[in-house]
Image (tube, rainbow, N blue to C red; front, side, top):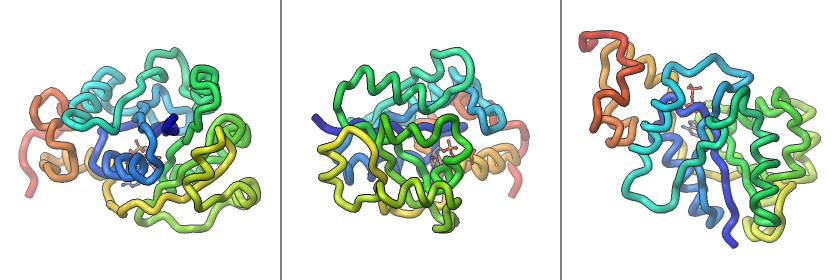
Length: 216
Ligand code: ATP
């Protein structure tokens, strides 16, 4: 069975950086990849768009392709989305199928602030996606934890259910949701940073368009 990879995030909004790295990860790992919007991220400010709005954007973004899908389980659960709980639930559902948590390099460096982070390796592998502007220096606790877990060979990940860390050298795209929110708030139109489906319905980007006029 193909590995199942989960790419969590706020997706406020989903952008081409997310989609492109998720797509490349699906190819590199020969995995099914699900984008998994988070409910109330315990370590982040609340998103501008509601859960329903973020689902609608992801739905529009994922049209006309077959490798990437969406998993909304964290939005259906009340309270904060702890990745450990979500992956444990998926582990119970999926038996011994390899599970891979995909993280951008910035999110990976912040892993030690996550709930039960060391136990994540009991339930999943980690796939670290390169991201421009993120240095290679890791906090020492994380460095130690992953030292013995690192692998280069995708085939190893495909034969084990959990416990390894692999770096995935994806094409660097310097796109962030923060930048897109800033552009939209100042009346700009970041057309080619976002999936074209987000422009089909004006309601989709309305949460971010707080400025009426075009700023040049
Ligand atoms: P924000 O700017 O609001 O912090 P973001 O663009 O980082 O948002 P998130 O939804 O927070 O997007 O990110 C979800 C996941 O996607 C994280 O693991 C993050 O590291 C990763 N990610 C986001 N953008 C990129 C990118 N351009 N390249 C690689 N990984 C990315």
